[in-house]
Amino acid sequence: MSDLRELYQSVILDHNKKPRNFGEPPGSNRSAQGHNPLCGDHVTVYLAVVDGVIEDVGFEGRGCAISTASASLMTEAIKGRSLEEAEKIFEGFHALVTGPAVSAVDARALGKLTVFAGVREFPMRVKCATLCWHTMHTALEGRDKSVTTE
Amino acid sequence: MRFDAERVRKDFPILGQTVHGKPLVFLDSAASAQKPQCVIDAISRFYAHDYANIHRGVYELSVRATAAVEQAREKIARFIGAAVNEIVFVRNATEAINLVAASFGREHVGEGDEVLITHMEHHANIVPWQRLCQEKRAVLRVAPIDDRGQLLLDAFEEMITTRTKIAAVTHVSNALGTINPVEEITRIAHARGVPVLLDGAQAVPHGRVDVHALDCDFYAFSGHKLFGPSGIGVLYAKAARLEAMPPYMSGGEMILSVTFENTIYKEPPYKFEAGTPDLAGAVGLGAAIDYLRAQDLDAVATHERELLAYASDALAEIPDLRLIGTAEHKAAVLSFVLDGVHPHDIGTILDREGICVRTGHHCAQPVMQRFGIPATARASLALYNTRDDIDALVAGLHRVREVFV
Image 1 (cartoon, rainbow over the protein chains, first blue to last red):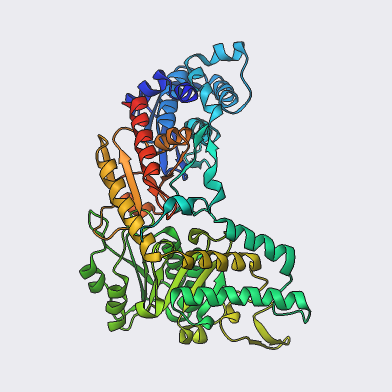
Image 2: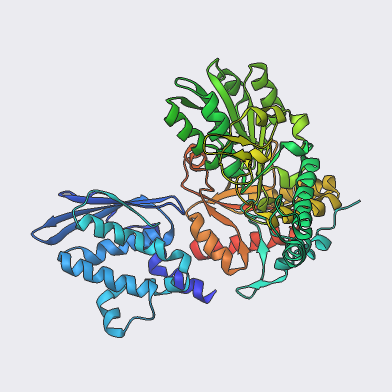
């Protein structure tokens, strides 16, 4: 049960139940859709980008606890950040859920997102955690298109 | 005589292991069934003693290999009540349906014609027809199902028109467990002159199938769901149909003579078996059928029916759980959703308890759309499952609720 608790931490369960920044924010000028054909999940990420800064961000869609919480926590992590900062956080997050343990410095930079560290023990679930980030990345590039986990 | 599932379990070596420190509970036979030792041995023996290419060599090994593969064809024919020349080896049910769509379909379906399927089909019985219809500017029509996941037979009948060229219907739904009244469906379609393809992938592992009694024109199934190896499947087609159909793939093995100007094809079923097929797969499937025929198939069916009833009652006790697919006539498939918990999360937590269930859309996205859900968790049973497996599932689902509720 311990690695399950590690995966389903209370922060993740809370964000799954009460997703933050759900819906399209006013002033949204970039968006992209993400799709995970394995589980049929969809996510749409909306960004309001002004002068290279993510002024506002929101998401819509339905998915598992990991993907919903990941999207919710992502919106909190990148709101108010510059595009470069957002991409940097994405890189750190990706390393956190796929790679060997991240260093303490990187962990500090990731803040709350470190609750996803347990995902790396569940290879089948990595795509659930990263779908919203790939979608956000696509939206940042200004491409109004969809991404898939496959 | 009562069916002894505990004895049967010993025939399946994979079931004896632990996963994540827990005894393996395998509840995903609808995706692919496990293999008895005799199937594994038959494949190994074939490679170790009798292997060579078939229908070619004049030497002893080739003769033995040919005999082994053709014996497997005979076993399959006997098992489903067909004639030997009506059994075409393919890779799986998907390829069988593609073969019919590409060969029979392309010849008979034209602009403005119709292909009739149902709302509960697996993607394998949707997409080949959809592509055919797109190519031919024909119309794919979909007969509706009710809230329990049962085909609305009257609507199905009404949707048959003079333009309908084929009806393709699943025998048993993989996502819902619904057993369709395929005899009646075939009768209705034939009364209007419409040939019928039945997708039997989920039906053959669970009871007697007699294709001549059903009178269907085509019947498709996979070996791997029938306790045989993956990579081998079967298309049954009435001899006259095969006779009239053009080849699907072409090349070696399926010809009598080739010049650069013209090719004369072999008789069916060989006309449809271009290239070297999965020889060991065919032998393995033959062994799986031997294994099943050695069981009391009626007792197996009773065992599965009792287990389904036991499992349905047990799952109904779990708060916030809803079964998707509650047809009156149902195979041992339990698709369900749990309020507030995504099936993917159910699957991960059950996995840590050693329990294998399928989560997702089960290659039947239109079924999910029909019930307004993105996915379900699905436990599917076979002859080697027991009440202990169901009890483990129920305990696992309580664990899921502990984490989430």
